[in-house]
Length: 384
Ligand code: SOE
Image (cartoon, rainbow, N blue to C red):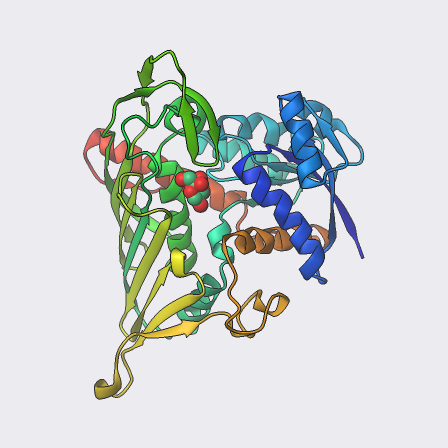
């Protein structure tokens, strides 16, 4: 079996999901390469050492440049906040390391383009972390649309609803600082439904949006773990520099209409990523919190028997499920990451492009920037 040596940069929420994914690829995907947990990298020596032990890496680095220079590393996995993506990716591409990068790819379209160009120039495999594409229900939705089961697509209605910052005293974490993350709910969670809409429906023609920052100042952060955080005891506050909610409309190039709502203020919603797609022959509905199901309405059935039916996607013929448990034995959030790293590893060993790649990351950056431009100019922006 071919082997790939991973160099993971970042050891928090995404570092944890990625390193777990490497192990699960090794356990369950025999058609993939074996991913060795070769080195993990982070600036805080004691924290990165602890992660090395917990996740099971063989070594650690505190400087990403040293990691990239190592001969024993085949790919660089960028699981850092967004403001570090560009410089790491440019150096890794120069050193001909394959790159996996978390979303959003760049802080803006200019950075996304630089990363895409560097990856193409250096002929490396590049993939962006749109993990929801790897839920079996999404693959089934894609197949149904491609097979014409929904007919002409009229609507994509996407929601990404969270509530983890609804408390005004929730501290000013890096995800609320424009200099570190680029944008708020727009780049963090709209990015996912934009990517799914491009995957399932097609390219966007134009966008028109509105954004809002409900809480403009928050206590200075002491520490963040996952999506929870503690405030600094000084009582000082700092400015929130990103959107709390971002809502927009699009005309797809194929004539369908799309609406997108991403917010961190949808009280009661934890990670409610959902959408409905309506076509001339039927509709589908998906909600991530019930990720093992896809709802389907067939407009061609006998009218008296019509209604949305729930398809269980754990049935063995759906993508990726062959590697897991018998039907009805559900899978979860972490499996989407395992599937994306199986794709990445297979792309490297089979020398084929990975999907979604930096082009998809770049296009998402273009759409995100266009939403922001439309908000500031209060007009429709054409996607170039
Ligand atoms: C926080 O909003 C977050 O962890 C995102 O960064 C992820 O991309 C999303 O999948 C879940 O929520």
